[in-house]
Image (cartoon, rainbow, N blue to C red; front, top):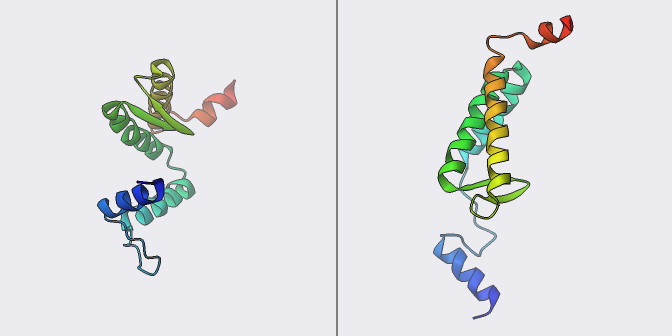
Length: 110
């Protein structure tokens, strides 16, 4: 079986259609997430980014794969995998800390 037939079979198994005339289902959660990101940015709610980082980290640890520019697998590159996870946890903690610490005023004093 050639690759195009394999790909067509895979799409068929996954429920995708080969017709471009059919409308794809409305992905309302994605649209809602994009709207939420816009509101978060406009309102300057840094703590929400911390929640999003945790939301991304937990499945990555469970699945042993993270994505930063390209997939990073824990079993193939554990140092890089844990470096990314550690950075995201640190950024999450920093984002939650903005609820309690005014970093702008703190750094202005330095």
